[in-house]
Amino acid sequence: MNREGDVDGTDRAGDGSGPAVGTPADTGPRADAGTPADRAPRADAVPRTRAGRRAGAVRPVDDIAHSTEAADAVLSPALTAYTGHLLRRAYIRANRLAEAGAEPPAGGAGGVRDFEVLDALREPAAASYSQQDLGELLGINRTTMVKLIDRLESAGLVRRSRNPGDRRSYVLALTAVGRDALRAMEPAMGVRDRRLTDALTPAERDRLDGLLAGLLAGPRPPEDPDRHRTGSLITRSHHLVRRRVEVALTAAGLQAARHFGALTVLDDGPCSQQQLARRLGVSEQAVLQIVDDLDDAGLVARDRDPLDRRRYALRLTPAGQEARRRSRDVVEATEADLGRTLGTEGRAELRALLIKLLRTEA
Image (cartoon, rainbow, N blue to C red):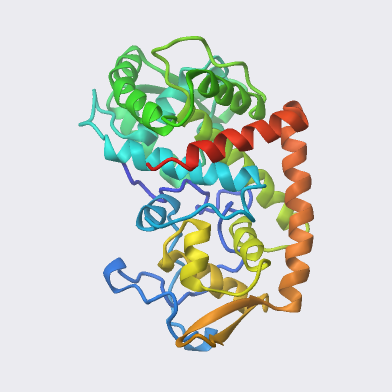
């Protein structure tokens, strides 16, 4: 899989399109910035204060890579009520499976990100897509998108031309060579989608695709057995929900979307950072940054674990409990608004299908 920039695709380039979904509201230094994975601090290490942290930029949290490390991740009952969390976990699962079955580049393209870009440009709506539109659809930041399109254009797979409606921007189009490369990549994506939906019956997979398309307010996926859509639909749905939830939380003066999961898990009672990582489906290294953010904001406290004095138990402070209540209301209202095209029963069915998909070993 190509890793140009941030693999999780969130916008950290500061392109003016709004705060990055999944990015901490506080972008100050973190102690783990730039720390190699093989020297990552243990999740239950002695807590650190801002004054004691090394200077440096925040290391972006890579959803896919960190969750690949979290092999013992579990589905937290507290989070299965939220479509956004289930979509994130399914998105990570889809990318892990695509990486596992990665093929050599076909006609200058290779990897799941290239496939998602070329596949999106095949859509009828793509006739008016700018680079920014495509980046928002697929959760790819502007800097990364420019590099990616430059490479695909150099390979003759896409064509970039001035937008007649806005000469400051470009519209993208798939070339004949790009269509050939897309067809060459589809068998590998088909394997990915079949493994991803292995727990579902064919009827359930079709229903999942239809519900995801409805969530995106798009047309029903075409009845084409050679057109593999589930992974692509999950990717787009994941980024849509994250973006909307982040905007809603920011407007309410709350922490970023990725903090919501930690607040929700801790609302069930204290736990160690290692347990929190498993329930969120991220690595211990990733959860350190989340806990640091919440600690700095006064939303969590680290107490000595009475059962093991070498580690710390995390608990919500009164301010954290209030933030959890407020953020829950915002997230639930946002998800309800996003899913209004599906209806109450459709939203429940979507969650049930995602849970069934995720409870099968990848």
